Amino acid sequence: MKIKITNLQMLSLIEEQINKGNSITIRVEGNSMLPFIKGGVDYVELSPITNQKLKTGDIILFRYSQSFVLHRIISINRETITTQGDAITKKTESITIQDVVAITTTIIKKNKRVYTHTTTFRLKSQFWQHLHPVRKLLMKIYIFAKAK
Image 1 (cartoon, one colour):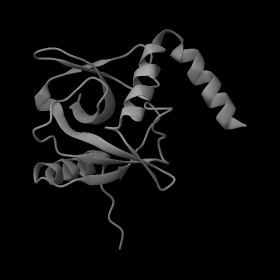
Image 2 (cartoon, one colour):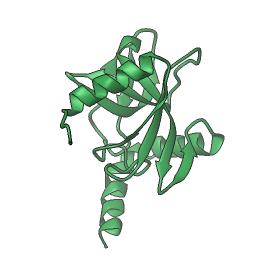
Image 3 (cartoon, one colour):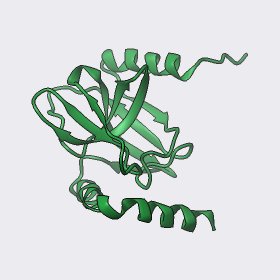
Image 4 (cartoon, helix red, strand yellow):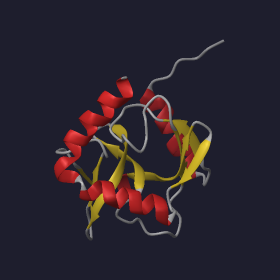
């Protein structure tokens, strides 16, 4: 017997497990994190935020506007965390630490594990962030190339 639940119900269950100290692996929906995470294909491992400090470049799951969002931290000040999807060039979200549910520790692409804390991954992410002025054009090229 199959049971259907809404995304919000599922994410609430995920938040409950994270709060118990468990890591959870989920398939990502949506393409706001392209080219690093492809919706409907890639998975992420979400872990509780323990004693580690959140940093610019971390990919987090957070509550936002009656929903849950998985985006990258682009800046942090004392009370506000600003996030943005890697494929998004204009819109950002402003949240507080209390909105953060989990941190992405691993991206799983075709059974290959990409650890988000490695120097290589962080350098690629920083490079992509510095391409902000031309990212919209690069995303169009990426999507066009993948469609062929």
